[in-house]
Amino acid sequence: MPVRVQITCSLEPSNYPSLKAFLAQNLPNVRGFEGCERVNILFDETQSQMLIDEDWQSINTHQNYMMFISNNGVLETLKAYFSEPPKISYFYLSNL
Image (cartoon, rainbow, N blue to C red):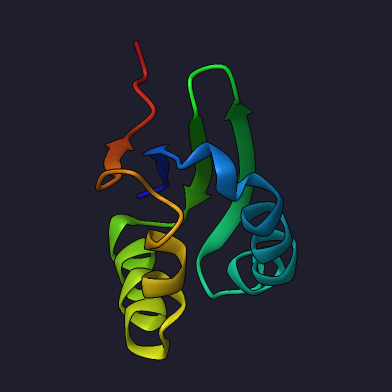
């Protein structure tokens, strides 16, 4: 079942330039991962927050990606830009 994944991240403001370079280098890998339908990155620099807004084929495909980046070190590098652990939320389309 398709799922929207939203990851809210509190950031260290001094890291914006290097974070943006890191994302530019790594986003093609996310977008090309099996099960990823879409990824957008949104910033609220006044609140030092980033929202990662993604569509995946299922929670399982997203969790497979998270395991992949955990195993290859990308997740550890990404977490270094955060001032606190991110909040991951999964949303499903309702047919109301």
